[in-house]
Image (cartoon, rainbow, N blue to C red; front, side, top):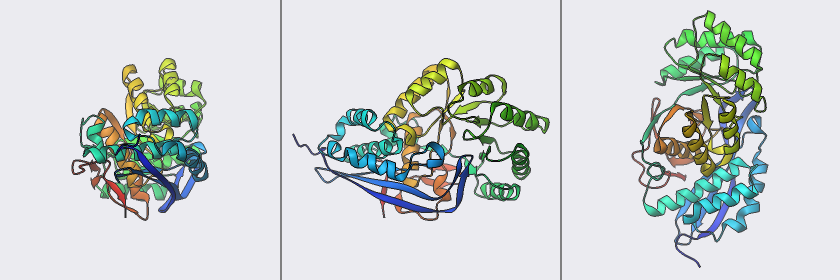
Length: 359
């Protein structure tokens, strides 16, 4: 039976957005955000929007992969009712579990349409714990000089917490880059992100060298490859700093394993890894186990970043917030979304859905 909340049509299109400079991590760099825009229309004309932001250097998923996954599910999504959003998410999990960004885009569009029609902002839908967050900003891989310049720019933006990509080169360069950043921003908490590019021994050597210099990171994120459970466990046990799992925390089942093996202190939740609904399961597991929460993303526009902001602010309890990639994009193809003042991301002006629409 057709109701006003029945999905009448689902459309997907390429969303290619140039970056101001290549976004480099240990696994490689991206010069263009090759994303997708999903538009979902209900029987009453309400529209919802979602973004897929696959990042091949992170997990191998490509724009073509995400597009094919969405197209394969189009006929099964059309005719569904957005009020049954968990059933839709279960279908996606069963059929395209490998395409996390595709799942995220569809689930975002479904929840956006549902809450737009209800006249409810998504941060309220997720629990209404807060309507604002404070984000860090990332310094990507590069030279010592580039790191120092980036740190100066971040401080100039009024952003307090700095995230540093490491693990793409030798230990000496990483140490020099971190030292240069600390010299520019001596009071900034530093989050170090290896994106799986290091070994446990190298990581512990890096932390030891930083300790000699009097530097203690506020967080160490995914230093070793996703499959190196023993290495991650070793670092969590011996490093003396909080350790976050990212690539190793790609699903609810993997987070259960992290809990069982005590291989992380913090879980970095990215909606692009597994979709919105499975991310809710991950939050529940992490909270039950007493693990800290971090919200992050791939190379995403203000649409996906705003969705993640609603998720984290609404649920509450996220100690680390890494929602900075719109600042790296050379263009903004949308209007609306969170309001940013320095590091502060505000959602309290949004009255329905995630509040982002194509220009």
